[in-house]
Image (tube, rainbow, N blue to C red):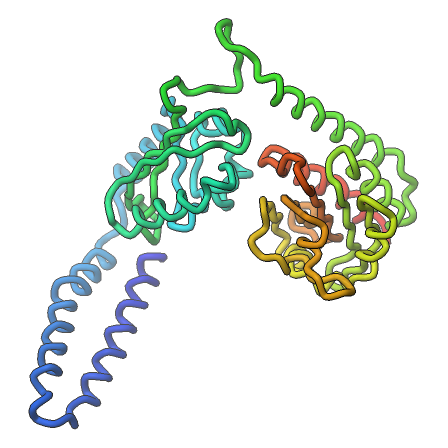
Amino acid sequence: MAHAEEFGEELADFVRRVAELKSARSVPTGDLQTVLDAAIFELDHVADQLWPWYERLSAPAAAPADRLEQQLLRAIFQRLPMPLALVDRETVVRRLNFAATRFTGVRAGYATGRPLTGLLAHSDRAAFRSQVAAVARGEGDRSLVVHLQQRPDVPVNATLTGLRPSGEPRTAVLTVLQPAGTRVPTAEIGPTQVPDLTEATRHAGLMEVLDAMTTALLSVPLGDRSDVLRRVAGVLHGRFADWVVADDRAARPTRTVVLGPSEEEAAALAKQDPTAAPLVVEAARGGSTALQVRPDDPDGFGQDASGAPVLVRADVTSLLCVPLITGDGPVQGVLTLFRTGARLAFSMSEAQAMDMMSRHIALVLSRLP
């Protein structure tokens, strides 16, 4: 279906160009040679590109043997011992194999549909996006050194090659990740490996937050939505984020809780209309989590009463904007977390944990009027 839509777009463009050529018949005789050359070019395009394309689209569907071969190739992709990611030209993950999930510490279901650049150090993202786009345009294979956000001290060789997998509408980019000069690390700690104490400490802290959130949700009296959000914000404030902003409901968001570095700053942000914060509006409408490190748009969370961008005034270095939603149900609200100053940015694993907590919060809110 995707290939048929792409062919339809190309055919529509061809028809528009033919219409322009027809209108050019009134040009002076001396300029007709240019028009004739353009018409011949369009005819060559039909003969060399559009007609073979049409033949491929009208060919019979793949035989069962072909489908079995595709399934085998997918299984091989998943079982290869090196970390592999299949991304599009915008670095959005289409597939992630088992080795890549162990290497990055992020499960495939969470990474799929999100940019692979979210796993990289902020300084490497622009270069990685540029190289992926070049490979997707057919400019040849590339290789560059990047750093994972989880292990910024370990250089990683990212090898990029373009391919056109069956069922994909555009050229995809196969990305191979390997630590420079070392073997691929996994989540398992063998007899010769030294545990990463920094990462272990962060993981232990995350487990404490998860435990505290579970305790708070299980003990909260079921009756007042704002009380639930206040308890949730109290768990996250300080130990997990410098700012916690909770907006109840989605159709008409209401700023319910704001906890910040000081009561005065929190009170100022509490007066903001949530619909003036694009990140909140997007999360409430689409139900998608936003993870940003050094946010590119200073107006992403709107302005304060003085007209200054909130993200600039608060010195936000990373943020999480999470919709409170369970499965296919309605969005119950939006939770926004800021980290400021020199504090470590939110990692993909922390975003994944927050995504899980948001579903539990939404489950509690869905039972309240």
